[in-house]
Image 1 (cartoon, helix red, strand yellow):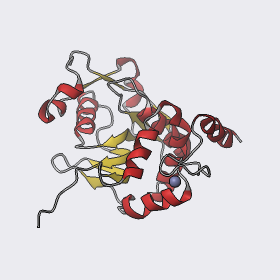
Image 2 (cartoon, helix red, strand yellow):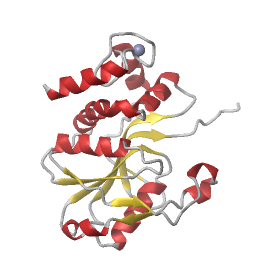
Image 3 (tube, helix red, strand yellow):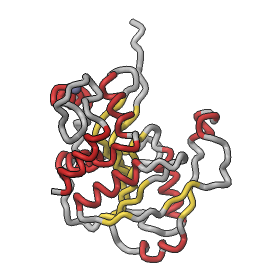
Image 4 (cartoon, protein in one colour):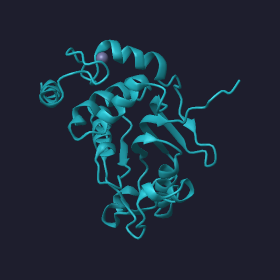
Length: 226
Ligand SMILES: [Zn+2]
Protein backbone atom coordinates (compact mmCIF):
# COMPACT_ATOMS: atom_id res chain seq x y z
CA UNK A 1 0.00 0.00 0.00
CA UNK A 2 2.62 2.53 1.13
CA UNK A 3 4.98 1.31 -1.57
CA UNK A 4 2.43 2.07 -4.28
CA UNK A 5 1.64 5.41 -2.72
CA UNK A 6 5.33 6.27 -2.63
CA UNK A 7 5.57 5.71 -6.35
CA UNK A 8 2.49 7.78 -7.12
CA UNK A 9 3.82 10.65 -5.05
CA UNK A 10 6.91 10.47 -7.22
CA UNK A 11 4.72 10.49 -10.35
CA UNK A 12 3.23 13.79 -9.25
CA UNK A 13 6.67 15.31 -9.87
CA UNK A 14 7.98 13.29 -12.76
CA UNK A 15 5.32 12.19 -15.22
CA UNK A 16 7.26 10.70 -18.08
CA UNK A 17 10.11 8.29 -18.77
CA UNK A 18 13.39 10.27 -18.73
CA UNK A 19 14.73 8.00 -21.46
CA UNK A 20 12.08 8.49 -24.14
CA UNK A 21 9.19 10.56 -22.81
CA UNK A 22 6.71 7.67 -22.67
CA UNK A 23 3.95 8.20 -20.11
CA UNK A 24 3.83 4.55 -19.10
CA UNK A 25 6.50 4.36 -16.41
CA UNK A 26 7.63 1.37 -14.37
CA UNK A 27 8.15 1.82 -10.58
CA UNK A 28 11.92 1.86 -11.11
CA UNK A 29 11.39 5.11 -13.03
CA UNK A 30 11.70 4.20 -16.71
CA UNK A 31 9.32 2.78 -19.30
CA UNK A 32 9.75 -0.95 -19.90
CA UNK A 33 11.43 -0.48 -23.25
CA UNK A 34 14.12 1.87 -21.87
CA UNK A 35 14.59 -0.35 -18.86
CA UNK A 36 15.09 -3.46 -20.98
CA UNK A 37 17.68 -1.54 -23.02
CA UNK A 38 19.66 -0.74 -19.89
CA UNK A 39 19.27 -4.19 -18.36
CA UNK A 40 20.38 -5.80 -21.56
CA UNK A 41 23.59 -3.82 -21.91
CA UNK A 42 24.67 -2.49 -18.55
CA UNK A 43 23.46 -4.79 -15.83
CA UNK A 44 26.36 -6.29 -13.89
CA UNK A 45 26.55 -10.00 -14.55
CA UNK A 46 28.72 -10.66 -11.49
CA UNK A 47 26.95 -12.75 -8.90
CA UNK A 48 29.82 -12.70 -6.44
CA UNK A 49 31.35 -9.59 -4.99
CA UNK A 50 34.32 -8.18 -6.87
CA UNK A 51 37.50 -6.88 -5.29
CA UNK A 52 39.15 -3.49 -5.49
CA UNK A 53 42.53 -3.75 -7.13
CA UNK A 54 44.81 -2.41 -4.42
CA UNK A 55 43.05 -3.08 -1.16
CA UNK A 56 41.14 -6.23 -2.07
CA UNK A 57 38.00 -4.79 -0.46
CA UNK A 58 34.82 -6.39 -1.78
CA UNK A 59 32.09 -4.52 -3.63
CA UNK A 60 28.89 -5.21 -5.56
CA UNK A 61 26.96 -3.00 -7.93
CA UNK A 62 23.95 -3.18 -10.24
CA UNK A 63 24.80 -1.23 -13.39
CA UNK A 64 27.98 -0.36 -15.24
CA UNK A 65 27.70 3.32 -16.03
CA UNK A 66 29.98 4.60 -18.77
CA UNK A 67 29.15 8.30 -19.24
CA UNK A 68 28.89 8.99 -22.94
CA UNK A 69 28.05 5.41 -23.85
CA UNK A 70 24.33 5.46 -23.09
CA UNK A 71 22.22 8.57 -23.03
CA UNK A 72 19.32 6.75 -21.38
CA UNK A 73 21.46 5.35 -18.57
CA UNK A 74 23.08 8.73 -17.90
CA UNK A 75 19.65 10.38 -17.73
CA UNK A 76 18.56 7.62 -15.36
CA UNK A 77 21.56 8.23 -13.08
CA UNK A 78 20.77 11.95 -12.97
CA UNK A 79 17.12 11.17 -12.28
CA UNK A 80 18.14 9.03 -9.30
CA UNK A 81 20.33 11.85 -8.05
CA UNK A 82 17.41 14.30 -8.10
CA UNK A 83 15.63 15.18 -4.85
CA UNK A 84 12.32 13.57 -5.86
CA UNK A 85 13.78 10.14 -6.60
CA UNK A 86 13.66 8.59 -3.13
CA UNK A 87 10.87 6.07 -4.04
CA UNK A 88 12.94 4.78 -6.96
CA UNK A 89 15.75 3.80 -4.61
CA UNK A 90 13.37 1.43 -2.86
CA UNK A 91 12.61 -0.36 -6.11
CA UNK A 92 16.30 -0.46 -6.97
CA UNK A 93 17.12 -1.93 -3.56
CA UNK A 94 14.49 -4.63 -3.96
CA UNK A 95 16.02 -5.48 -7.30
CA UNK A 96 19.57 -5.45 -5.91
CA UNK A 97 18.72 -7.88 -3.12
CA UNK A 98 16.94 -10.37 -5.35
CA UNK A 99 19.48 -10.18 -8.16
CA UNK A 100 22.55 -10.59 -5.99
CA UNK A 101 20.99 -13.43 -4.02
CA UNK A 102 21.29 -11.60 -0.72
CA UNK A 103 19.73 -13.53 2.15
CA UNK A 104 17.38 -11.43 4.20
CA UNK A 105 18.30 -12.48 7.70
CA UNK A 106 21.93 -11.50 8.09
CA UNK A 107 21.57 -8.65 10.59
CA UNK A 108 23.34 -6.34 8.21
CA UNK A 109 24.31 -2.88 9.39
CA UNK A 110 24.22 -0.37 6.54
CA UNK A 111 26.48 2.66 6.66
CA UNK A 112 25.83 5.29 3.98
CA UNK A 113 28.75 7.28 2.60
CA UNK A 114 27.93 10.94 3.25
CA UNK A 115 27.87 13.40 0.39
CA UNK A 116 29.97 16.53 0.35
CA UNK A 117 27.01 18.43 -1.05
CA UNK A 118 24.74 17.06 1.66
CA UNK A 119 22.77 15.03 -0.85
CA UNK A 120 21.02 12.01 0.52
CA UNK A 121 21.06 9.35 -2.20
CA UNK A 122 23.36 6.95 -0.41
CA UNK A 123 21.18 7.33 2.70
CA UNK A 124 18.02 6.63 0.65
CA UNK A 125 19.65 3.56 -0.87
CA UNK A 126 20.88 2.37 2.54
CA UNK A 127 17.40 2.81 4.06
CA UNK A 128 15.83 0.95 1.18
CA UNK A 129 18.33 -1.91 1.44
CA UNK A 130 17.77 -2.12 5.17
CA UNK A 131 14.03 -2.35 4.53
CA UNK A 132 14.64 -5.28 2.17
CA UNK A 133 17.05 -7.13 4.47
CA UNK A 134 15.51 -6.18 7.79
CA UNK A 135 18.82 -4.55 8.63
CA UNK A 136 19.56 -1.25 10.31
CA UNK A 137 21.04 1.99 9.02
CA UNK A 138 23.67 3.76 11.07
CA UNK A 139 24.93 7.11 9.87
CA UNK A 140 28.38 6.56 11.29
CA UNK A 141 30.40 8.66 8.90
CA UNK A 142 30.79 12.39 8.46
CA UNK A 143 32.92 14.25 5.96
CA UNK A 144 36.09 15.49 7.60
CA UNK A 145 35.57 19.26 7.66
CA UNK A 146 39.24 20.03 8.00
CA UNK A 147 39.38 19.20 4.32
CA UNK A 148 38.10 22.44 2.82
CA UNK A 149 38.92 22.20 -0.86
CA UNK A 150 35.86 21.60 -2.99
CA UNK A 151 35.89 18.20 -4.72
CA UNK A 152 35.55 19.73 -8.17
CA UNK A 153 38.69 21.86 -8.07
CA UNK A 154 40.82 18.95 -6.97
CA UNK A 155 42.78 16.72 -9.25
CA UNK A 156 42.34 12.97 -9.22
CA UNK A 157 45.01 12.32 -6.63
CA UNK A 158 43.69 14.93 -4.20
CA UNK A 159 40.17 13.64 -4.68
CA UNK A 160 41.21 10.18 -3.61
CA UNK A 161 42.21 11.68 -0.28
CA UNK A 162 38.63 12.21 0.87
CA UNK A 163 38.48 11.46 4.55
CA UNK A 164 35.76 10.80 7.05
CA UNK A 165 35.34 11.12 10.76
CA UNK A 166 33.33 8.73 12.86
CA UNK A 167 30.32 9.94 14.83
CA UNK A 168 31.74 8.97 18.20
CA UNK A 169 28.52 8.61 20.12
CA UNK A 170 27.33 5.59 18.15
CA UNK A 171 30.52 3.60 17.85
CA UNK A 172 30.23 1.52 21.01
CA UNK A 173 27.22 -0.46 19.85
CA UNK A 174 29.05 -1.12 16.62
CA UNK A 175 31.85 -3.19 18.07
CA UNK A 176 29.75 -6.29 17.59
CA UNK A 177 29.94 -9.11 15.17
CA UNK A 178 27.71 -7.82 12.39
CA UNK A 179 28.04 -7.80 8.69
CA UNK A 180 28.69 -4.25 7.69
CA UNK A 181 27.75 -2.85 4.31
CA UNK A 182 28.96 0.57 3.26
CA UNK A 183 26.47 2.08 0.80
CA UNK A 184 27.09 4.55 -1.99
CA UNK A 185 25.07 5.54 -5.04
CA UNK A 186 28.03 5.39 -7.43
CA UNK A 187 31.41 3.71 -7.06
CA UNK A 188 34.18 5.16 -9.24
CA UNK A 189 37.66 4.38 -7.95
CA UNK A 190 36.59 2.94 -4.61
CA UNK A 191 38.59 5.63 -2.80
CA UNK A 192 35.62 6.73 -0.67
CA UNK A 193 35.02 3.13 0.35
CA UNK A 194 38.68 2.67 1.27
CA UNK A 195 38.62 5.88 3.29
CA UNK A 196 35.46 4.70 5.06
CA UNK A 197 37.02 1.30 5.72
CA UNK A 198 40.16 2.89 7.14
CA UNK A 199 38.32 5.04 9.64
CA UNK A 200 36.06 2.15 10.70
CA UNK A 201 39.05 -0.12 11.13
CA UNK A 202 40.90 2.57 13.06
CA UNK A 203 37.98 2.75 15.47
CA UNK A 204 37.76 -1.05 15.63
CA UNK A 205 34.28 -1.19 14.13
CA UNK A 206 33.73 -4.45 12.31
CA UNK A 207 36.66 -4.50 9.92
CA UNK A 208 36.33 -8.18 8.96
CA UNK A 209 32.97 -8.67 7.34
CA UNK A 210 32.63 -5.58 5.20
CA UNK A 211 31.47 -4.83 1.65
CA UNK A 212 30.43 -1.85 -0.41
CA UNK A 213 27.13 -1.95 -2.28
CA UNK A 214 26.49 0.64 -4.97
CA UNK A 215 23.80 1.13 -7.59
CA UNK A 216 26.23 2.18 -10.31
CA UNK A 217 29.86 1.58 -11.12
CA UNK A 218 31.21 4.50 -13.09
CA UNK A 219 33.75 3.58 -15.73
CA UNK A 220 35.53 5.67 -18.30
CA UNK A 221 35.07 4.86 -21.92
CA UNK A 222 38.07 3.11 -23.45
CA UNK A 223 38.57 4.23 -27.00
CA UNK A 224 39.90 1.76 -29.50
CA UNK A 225 42.10 3.53 -32.04
CA UNK A 226 42.43 0.65 -34.48
ZN1 LIG B 1 11.42 5.14 -22.07
